[in-house]
Length: 110
Image (cartoon, rainbow, N blue to C red; front, side):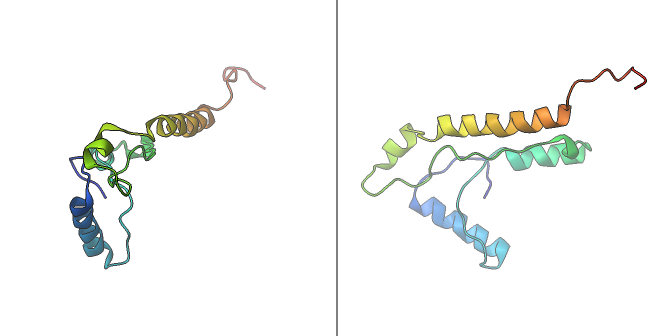
């Protein structure tokens, strides 16, 4: 589910699930949100650069408080931020190293 704004709380998540239901004929399950990725991909596709885009979705925060947690407490903490950044680096750097390949002397006639 994507949008322009971060949201949190049960009512907004119900709205997100409704949108997912409409778009998937009630077969999809809303599980996470994202903001910029779709817009970035749309602009890159428009200019012919989508084949150069790698989107790494690493969930870093929650839109629902755990039972008993106040919504303000939820919005002041992002417990998944560090693992999300680490995972994005691990995957992104692995892909980048693969794409760059081993350095070779391309001018040699071997």
